[in-house]
Image 1 (tube, rainbow, N blue to C red):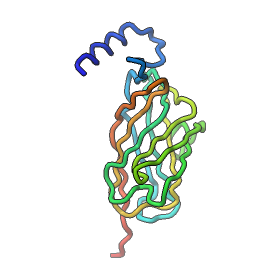
Image 2 (cartoon, rainbow, N blue to C red):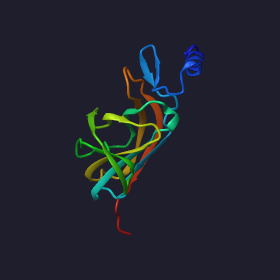
Image 3 (cartoon, rainbow, N blue to C red):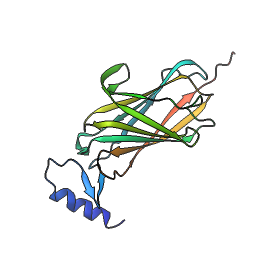
Image 4 (cartoon, rainbow, N blue to C red):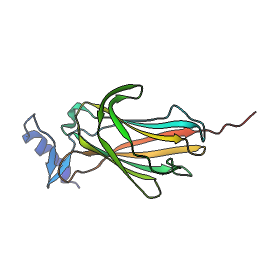
Length: 176
């Protein structure tokens, strides 16, 4: 692990500025890892209908690699946030309520719907904001739902890189 930083530094210094991605031992990596992510749900009541989960990831211009996918791992929440089962997402460039170009996407659910592997059919360009939306139709039970997010570069043998965590609060409707 100690050798990795000097090797990456040497690779970066020797690469032309038009680099598509870093390849180290045949694995593809970002030059600059995405660090800006959000989880938006405009409906925050338990079991509320019409719910949609928007996962937004901003890919820095300096990433020098397209985004090939996103891994989501639910790390907190009594129930899976996808309480009613897997839902295939849609994706687009831009933010919720400010839709841009559609991006072909698919998702694979595992571990009782707590692990989600999202893959794009074509790479999302560096500098873009991509939103992946799950139309879950109905919110899960009340609680705090926290996801760990990893970004996956486009290319051979991609190395997932941790972006951070996002959270969503679902509250119950209780009369006073």
